[in-house]
Image (tube, rainbow, N blue to C red; front, side, top):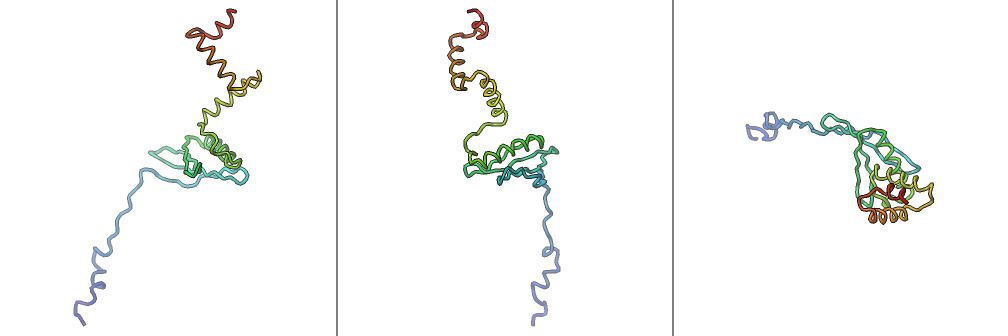
Length: 147
């Protein structure tokens, strides 16, 4: 037998054989699943993440076969949007509208104002744009009160 012994056994005790790489710290720390918002059988997870010392809440869901993620500063706004997304998923209408939350709020407010008059939104917009063209830079309210 070789006096030097088995090469693997003799190398196992050296520093190079037992050295491991130190783990690097991440700049962005994932804190994991924070909560799940359910509507019937649809579930939208909310993750709590930390980036540069700030906490964010991230929704994760699928639309048209693609993963969508939306970030929010407060858990309340994340819950509100997650519930809306879950309702849309459950009703099968996830792909219908791609409105942002503030755009959706404006749309709902416009519909509520028009509800009192009974005028559909499209008809009101047609009337407004025609009146705006005729008025030019003048105020529509001022022109309406002159007659």
